[in-house]
Amino acid sequence: MLELKNISYSVKDETTGRTQEILKDLNLAFADRGINVITGPNGSGKSTLIKLVMGFEKPTAGRVFFNGEDITDMNVTERARRGFTIAFQQPVRFKGITVKSLLELASGKKMDTDAMCGCLSAVGLCARNYIDRAVDGTLSGGELKRIELAMAIAKGGEVFLLDEPEAGIDLWSFEDLVRVFDRLRDKTVIIVSHQQRILETADKIFLFESDKVSSAERGEDMFALLTRRPALCWRDVKEN
Amino acid sequence: MDKTDSELLETIADLHGIPEGSFNIRKNGKLMARNSTADIEIVPKKDKDGIDIIVKPGVVNKSVHIPVLLTVGDFKETVYNDFYIGEGADVTIIAGCGIHNDACGDAEHDGVHSFYLEKNAKVRYIERHYASGDGTGKKSFDPVTNIYCKENACFAMESTQLGGVTSTVRKTFASLDDKAQLIVKEKILTDNDECAVTDFRVELKGAHSRADIVSRSVAKGHSVQSFGSDLVGENECFGHVECDGILLGGARIISTPKIDAVSPEASLVHEAAVGKIAGEQLMKLMSLGLTEQEAEDAVIKGFLN
Image (cartoon, rainbow over all chains, first blue to last red):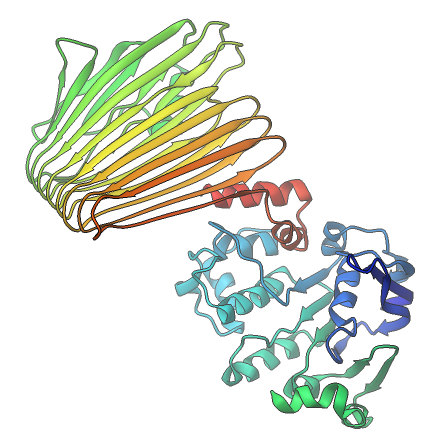
């Protein structure tokens, strides 16, 4: 169980000098198994939440607990080793580092072609064409995004944080993406997304708004939660 | 050959003992072993220190090793090696130099290499410089490489300085005739108070000649690197120079480009980027379970790969 207790996060606006509150006294719990999709308008703190869970940022107030242990002061490396795995919204490029080395760094061991093929084919890429390529500007945005997900699969873990995994991936490959999430359903999966197809796979949906978070579980009328606020969220879903 | 010799040979030339084919191994200013073949002849110079390497026309898929070892201090040498590559030949030349200096006196090897490529000749030139040893004496290399390519000849140079070299001043000059091509991949790693200076001057004389120079450098500690390039386009030609540097600690990298389009048909490009490792790269690797130090090492290893 991953629990966020009384989490607040604020940043100082460099130009005005005023403090801007992004998350305020947030209380959330994520079950050991299941897909949680976080949705909501831009600027509502969705990506900030992912960063706080991974340890990239520290909350200004509140604590984060994982299986009862307070992990608030743990750094990124420690959390990664405890089973926290993240796929970035915008994948990072590396001059000279190949797909093969990144997959091996992610899995923490040497991988043979079959093992790499397992991770890459899950995201619709053929290992033969990719393992020796550098993860740099020679790859397209969609390819980088798929490799980012393949790295998360290679790493494995207990808590998967996927920030807009569908961004840059063509509509035709959506079902592949959904299959990837399905394979992870026995873990804690937290996905930030605006896509209806991904919202449909959720066991629980969290709607982030400027001042509060509401949630609905599978079986409840999840979409009613969203459609009640067309101006905030449903618009994004329809546009895509 | 002792343990230090074999370790140096492995590091600079991937050699495990004496190679096959043509080779010339030099240690502390003296000949250690040499083999000349009918295809690639090695002839010692009479007027000065060095050798002539003569590759017969049409010789393909052959290689020649000319490693140099320096395992003493208080030693400085300048060696002149001239390479004559016959028409249509296609060969690989491996010319590393390793210094192991445990003494307090300086050790320096300066190789002056000149390559004369005939029409349609192709050379892959691999040059690795490496130094080790705990002595206070300097370990220096000041290589000069001159390349003359006739019509449609191609010279591909991979030069790597792996570390431990106290100071180096590298000068490379190339002159390219019609359709001739120069490809350079340079990798330099410096640390502590080391200093590395590299200078390229390329004269694109012939129509449709091409030059592509890519330099990747990592400067750690308080080391200083300086990269200079001077591309001269005298005809309808294409030239590209790229200098990428990663800075760590209190190191410094200076990049000075010069491109001179003498001919209005010349197309010359220079790119340079110097800076610290991007924070997001470290974050990504740490999110895979690496410590900050391991993440930094992985970025550098990939960058210089």
